[in-house]
Length: 332
Image (spheres, rainbow, N blue to C red):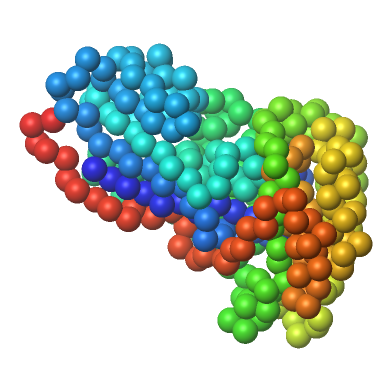
């Protein structure tokens, strides 16, 4: 049996420039961090004593005999990717709900690739883990997804990720002192908006609108450099929050489905209560709302948004890990 633990991510700036339709022509950059909320996947070769060959457990349980019969798209595609003939059991658990803007779908795929690789005696670098997950989601499942979520989940940490060129992806950690990092984390708040969405559907609109959003996406990409300059300087971190606000005002105009009246009301309430900036995480449409606020203003913001779940978190640095490994029995 192999058990993997793969973090979820928060994307600050550059979202939208990580789609191949954009970065293969213009290049792209994002700044993101992984957090201490995780997706757990356990995999083992299934003993040959059952009527089914594949058992997949997530919000439902699937018992089937052919990979093509599996409903879960990532499990089906990833098992095909490994071209395995063994019966396999997959169990999924997570700290936070799916389809909520934290890259959970890609964390699932990264964790599953890591687990199945370990089960087959393969060790992947973080880079290969990211590239395999990107290939599975974009080319096998054919989801409308970018390339930042898989990369963040595989590598872990607070990073600048660049897309395009010969390397396809390049990951550089943000050089920031521990004291500055703690101060930065202390200014961030996460709220669940109580409803989820299909990121691929929203991203489809986003991708369709790419030709007419060239100026906006270029501006969003430039904000990556500006945000890193703020984090690595000794200037007031509140400038980061103000930049988040500017980026959200641009992003919400990129596709009709990114925001709605309910989301706008939540954002306005947070700002009115004292937040300096924020954004809806992920492709849009629902999920988690991130706010940047001075610590002394956070209690007022929590009271104002008390009908929504506040989720405390910290950054994490490790990315997807195999946290348990037991060699499979030779007879299987």
